[in-house]
Amino acid sequence: MSVVIKPLRVTDKSRMAEVFERYPEEQDRFDTENVAVFDKIETAVYRTMNKGKLPLWSAYKRVRNYGVKVGQNPKRDVEEVRTQPDYCRFYAWLAAQTKPEAVLEFGSGFGVSGMYWLAGMKYAGGGTLFSFEPNRLWTPIVRDNFASVGGSYDLTEGTFEGNLERITTSVEIALIDGIHTRYFVRQQLALIEGVAAKGAIVLIDGINFSDSMKKCWGEIQAREDFVGVWEVGARVGVVELPSSEVGIGAAVARFFARILGRNKA
Ligand SMILES: C[S@@+](CC[C@H](N)C(=O)[O-])C[C@H]1O[C@@H](n2cnc3c(N)ncnc32)[C@H](O)[C@@H]1O
Image (cartoon, rainbow, N blue to C red):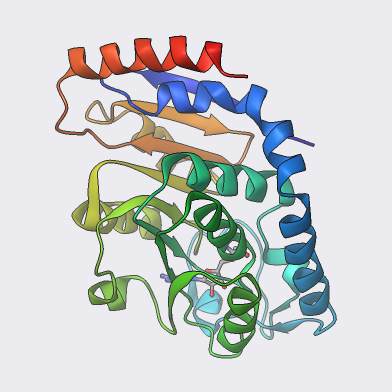
């Protein structure tokens, strides 16, 4: 299974457009090249699955407009909360391609998306993952999972909003994967814009999770200041923040990247 990246609006200032265009042709080769790393990560997921269902962060019980019923004593296992493998491999590829100095993600959950970000950054040869998870019962598991891949990471036991000072490098890729409601995501996106590098991309998981999230994604994608907007499969929205580069420069860079990309073996 593979994810499809659908452009919704791409301006001539976008630097990511040509990167995303390359994914369909590069995906198989990248996945094959990294099969050993991805198998190792999925083995860590399997070990995590053996821990069974563990209590969800208590704040979920108080969320308004949540898309699903949470109940009084909610518990989840890793398969219920993890990012699916096709999206995970795309995240690894994205990090490998863009060589970010820093990736920001929240929440960590049990650490699955984070392990793939780390694998992608390792492939790229550097970069730090800043990951946030307020569930104290889950963070030790995240720590073990991240250690199994290695690389540079900073795991905070707490919310993203409450611990912004942990982010010490300007963020080039951010993933919002916490409580999927418009109320939270709107504020989180605004905070990310404050810590993100120019031209950064922000991925928003759960765009079709509920009516609240559909409304939220509708508002975000309508913003004219983003230089590119995409959907990845049916669940992840992507926006590209403006960079300082002038439009014509980006267009020329894209032209050459396309030519060089075509000539690649
Ligand atoms: C869907 S799971 C994340 C799955 C993870 N990205 C993965 O692929 O394995 C959502 C997680 O976000 C955490 N969370 C919710 N709100 C958060 C916030 N404001 N800051 C950090 N983490 C948050 C929850 O405790 C939960 O573990």
